[in-house]
Length: 65
Image (cartoon, rainbow, N blue to C red; front, top):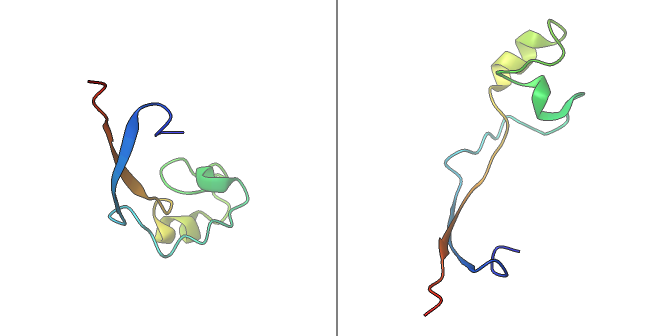
């Protein structure tokens, strides 16, 4: 989709990865910090996990000339 929009994939990074996050949360990423959608339920567990596992991708806009 990015290429169809005129972008070219350049690189990826795991700088925002969180290996502690297994992505199995009752209310998805909203269970984690900073939202804590479950309120006090399992809050200590989710505080320990930190934020969700993420990826970083870099794209550049291709010249149309």
